[in-house]
Amino acid sequence: MPNDDHARPPAGSIKEDGRYPLDLTGPSSHTLVRQKGVGSLIIGPSHLGKKADLHVAPDSPIDWTVFDAFSTPAGSPWPRFLHYTGGDAGFFDWAQKRPIEEMTWAPILSEDTVVDAGPSILHGLTIELGPSGGHLSLRLPRRPSRLSVSGDLSRFTATGDMPASLTLAPRTGRRKNDTPFLMPDLGELHQVTSLALQNAPLGQPISLECLDRFPNLNSLSLWGNFCDVDLLARQTRLTNLELRFMPDLEDLPSLNVWPLLDRFIAYNVEEFTGKRLRQQMKTRAKTRPWTGHVSVSQLRKPEWWSTEFGRPFSSWPKRLAKLANEAYDAAQADLAQARSFADAEAVITAFTLRFNTLKGIETTEREDLGEAVWQLSQSDHLIGQPITEEMAQSWFDAARNY
Image (tube, rainbow, N blue to C red):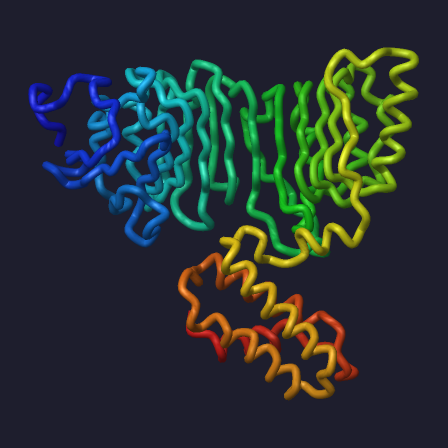
């Protein structure tokens, strides 16, 4: 329960770094360590370890008003950026009086939940949906804001005023040969005018069939691997189109199919289509000059994609990624000499064992290592018959203790 107002420092009065007791979930339940130049705060369950600044159980109610006393040296509300993992949606009520610049919420919901954020003042809201838990139905803020939703999009429904921009990053498979991902029905969100879709560059492709449900788009940004790219020709209202980290643009329509287009960016795209786009840009400029920013840059050859994104260690801390890549290189070289399944099992087992004594191997890293084992099993060897995914996975599971 919140303390009486007289026990609280005046709103915005604490601007200095230091250690401060907080009545976050009860009297002096937490100590906030505020450091110079840090404008963000991460709250979440204890399993997040050092990734969270304050540990709170997912089902614990939070008194968000304890942060009213804090401000930046310039006088604006602090923290500027909040990241919360848990089930307390009370920050939406708090934000009716205390604006939040950027709120990232990873909801942990034991049941279906309805939240009214209509009166809330959130300039940016990011929702990260895990693979399990209750469904979240959110009435969006009446004031235009940026909305980003990632993870299991089928667990989310939004109604009310449309966001100024919408970013969607669905949880897709790791492999580019998987059956294309089909976006779930997003209801009222299909009325947005500005949309960004994000995916891994070499992951399961997202089908762009979903764009037919967005009749009002004038701005579209794509990041990563997509298929059915030819369907972009139907988006004739586009004035802005951005393509980033896209390894396959063979079916991209000519730029002249978008008569209203005045801003175009292609960045880190495959080389062949990139050269074609550069020529189309110049040709278009002769008949109708571009009024916004246009550029086609960082054209990439096929081998670049596998080097940069082919291995699953890109998001690891540098020290761990270096160790993982060294182990991968050694295993790949040893597998190239394998002449029997026993040889292959010995290589995969040795690779797996190298991570048993490393700190920092959690669920995500374990999944990454499992993917690395699958990739290794598909690499060159001298056995004469394929190593199945089930076989490689069984060797991996037998050797790991993470």
